[in-house]
Length: 547
Image (cartoon, rainbow, N blue to C red):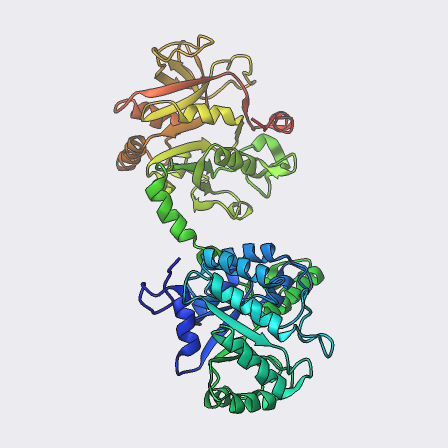
């Protein structure tokens, strides 16, 4: 577990780093942390060591600092902290959670988890926080020395640090008793002593230091005498200052203020700019490292981009329903049609979704979708809209009309069809023929047989509104391989050069693509619809979206 401390050679173990901090001539500082996230924040702030506060860990678990959290529960928190930071961690080990036997087991378990040291206080188990009550009873000095010797005898790394904390001043037993206990604890194997006080000034701490005369490193916790200038501690010969609970206390203040503001406003608007962005949480917790590791250890992820063409107003037969929004945004059981379409595509693995907007474009504003606009939507067709998203034709892509709904298994199947260009074709088109007739009839190399014919793949031979011998109707869903995306990009440029881009439709584009590659046909049997009028809208509101 020999992770390096910040700015130190990689060969320095964490126990060695803590021992160096305790024994170096200059004053050292340990900052409180209570979980993996706060330990990372302490490291990023520039501290060289972490104080794993018993009070803060208990509070983070929602219990009192009275050993209500078991030592194994605390150990689990410490394991996350040790994994989260390279810094040495000095653990607030309370009383050692029992007698000598508990202490020696505690030391072994802490070492196994990469902890650098433990601080044990001379009180009785279960402990009570030092700032509660008066005249708390202390452990028998001889018995407590046995705990320290047991800890020292149990460590396997000679650099693992044991700090003995005496509560003699806090319990009211006086300076002589504090000195007597500190000397006994040092002799019993403590690497440093922590002298604790809850006075408002540092007077008794400084008096202890003067009489102690540097016999071993002294650690202090200036929570109550915080007004004392730090330079005074340095001049008095303090080894290490512990800032004991301030990250937890700051977190309580911030969490309370945020919760109260959201409850009062019933909105996130006022606080969103005042809190850390979600991206910062991802950064601190190492999402970038996970992405890098994924590229090494996982098979390459299939990235399928989605493009939805929703620029036209459409749905003139829907009347006033599309006065203030495009047809793609009509309500379908409480959600816009376009939202349902996009969610289906995402559920099938499509990513980096792009919607081409036009009529009433401000009505389309989903946070998880990118947008490009065809501002000439009134005088141009579908291919001109697709051209606005030409930069997204990169790699494998799915292109869909913005007014269609389909069961997800249709797209799942289409994505598995081999070939550079593939389209989903409804073989039961005659059953659902509308009054005006389907627009995108398809004739394929073979008709649907009612079962898969992997050895006889169907390919498109013609597409249009008036063709001989149609075998189905294109539902407005097309899959492109990486090469297929390149072919479409090339045709878009060619159509523009020929002056045909503005008026071209997707059937014309598919017909032109046939010159370069077969257009595969993936037959489906109903389970889709497009929305053109109020009857279609009624059908859409009864559409089975699951599956």
